[in-house]
Length: 277
Image (tube, rainbow, N blue to C red):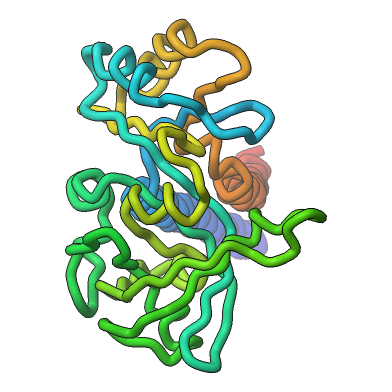
């Protein structure tokens, strides 16, 4: 009698352990799938608001006469297009409201064809002209601004001991975007290269050169080729390197989840093995 009860108990333990293994494997697959999906979505949005590759000065100085370098970059077969970018920190004023932002200016064709800003517009369009701005929805709400609102841009980088007043440029909001990433919507504004050249007093210069690829899978091979083209102190950065902190965080989240559920599965396997002894 006790033998039958013992066999039933062992069978119950075995079934429970097998169920634990099944649940552990299912939970592991679901968790990893969610994190991979999150990573893919973040990657898609980041690439939509950044070039696949960027050439920048190692010391943060501007690149002089970028057109010469761009012609050599465009000769690489995997490159779709290169374009100059002027970037800097600015203060915006709309009426009595003020806020800070990062202004990125580039040729209008690059903004329209290579970036995903057009697909995220909730108001206005990408017709920038010389002084048009594309602004995130969060920042627009802070400034109580809409399409057509005139704003003043203050170049904070122009303030020096000899020139304590910033250079000021007037601009008009042409469009408002909502990327789904709050950090972008509240911090990044976009304009034409002509606006950047005027505001940052940098004609024929670039903060960086953006490079769009025909296929994102060619990122590493193209990066290696461009490293042979650019000269010190210029350097080539991929989109993943520019956002390394974020992707390191995602990988950090994946590791403990895999370890925890693997331990759950291991314990269940030990329980099953012990019932067979």
